Length: 234
Image (cartoon, rainbow, N blue to C red; front, side):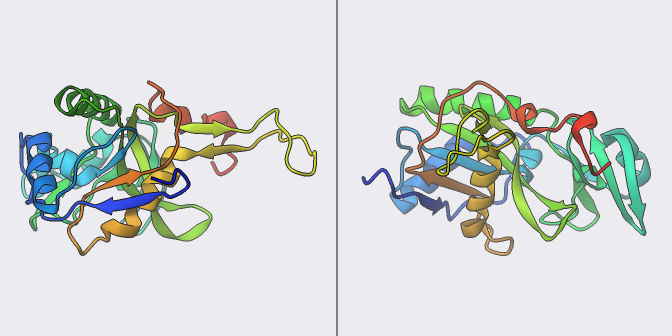
């Protein structure tokens, strides 16, 4: 394979996920159907929704006060306009409604973010390595808006086996200028790339990114969360 070619492979044929499903076994069946398999240094990108369903993070809105749930899922309410709340979650993410989502789930229910996406990504990576004998990286993604641009994009909310940031600080560009602040959020870029084949209405919650050269790391998503004293937007 030409190492300069990056492929994004959608995993079709996955079922509706539910509490305590074995994700590895389900992927194995889907891979068999589409004649796919894990390869060394693949990046597995999984949407938050299926992780939340498997980890039983669904709530019944008839028996749960959404305002109380929002409060419990947040450490700080930053902005509010109409029904939209911008909150800082317990994970440190700043997002709409603390990541509580009513899409792609039965009416009358909502999904909360996973308790510890990094832990889940790490466990999945280790299981895949043991089962298939290959080293891969795992990214758990979710769709966030952005304060300074319209539209939404996938970002990483959990990762394992990949260096989250690629820093150019201390290097020079092609013109010899010193780079003082350039850091690339690799896991966010890969999460966003995966959305190109996932599409919200096509029911593709998993993708494999193949051919991208990355550095191994045990670091988690905290590496890309900006400290409050560095945030110019708050």
